Length: 261
Image 1 (cartoon, rainbow, N blue to C red):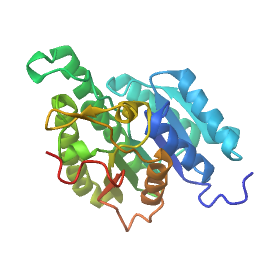
Image 2 (tube, rainbow, N blue to C red):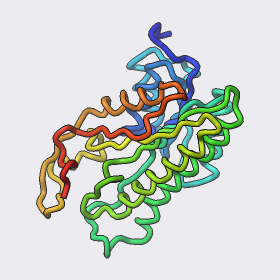
Image 3 (cartoon, rainbow, N blue to C red):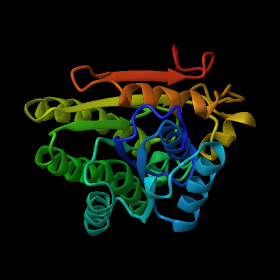
Image 4 (tube, rainbow, N blue to C red):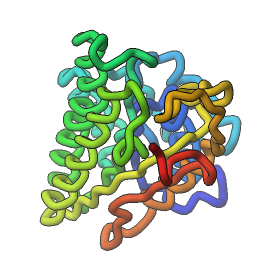
């Protein structure tokens, strides 16, 4: 067992844990001694995340559970949180991370309804369903309470071209964060949001070759190490429930966000 584990009793759910930011956060939490339920659409990628965590640090076998979950499906989400109760007994953290950008480069007037609906179902409905299950469990457990961190985006503040579905859901997620932060107060449930810009993942690979800017030009954009995001999430997660990071913006320092447009 890793002697530097500081929070061995803490338990978390990380959605979208099979890749990108979700994977990095899950590995960071596991290395810090958390028990983590890895949720995602593909079991094989969740197992890869668990293996990466085990390779990076001493992780107990009973500290990880992989649960295939489509967060847009209420039954899947209910089964995920039932598995958490059975495996860990309580829930201290939900990192509401699962999301999709949708089809890239499609003008708004050509965006298919099915594509719009898929983004909304995943990014917004999925976050709602997971947060609702987390609220129920955190209110009932002893000691009562816990923390929810929603993965927003700098697109919750300023859009990219051809991103109506993604941008709309991220703006909506900010409203959900604010509302849940208020509703959670009587139950010792702290709710915050991390808005991320250009973390180096598969989703941002296009930044390295050039992505469409507001002026119609293509430009290469800087990215940052996804591990820096993971450490920020861990800091937010490990605060006492009497303290909360309501909103944090973590971005590649020179990306064209401040002054975008």
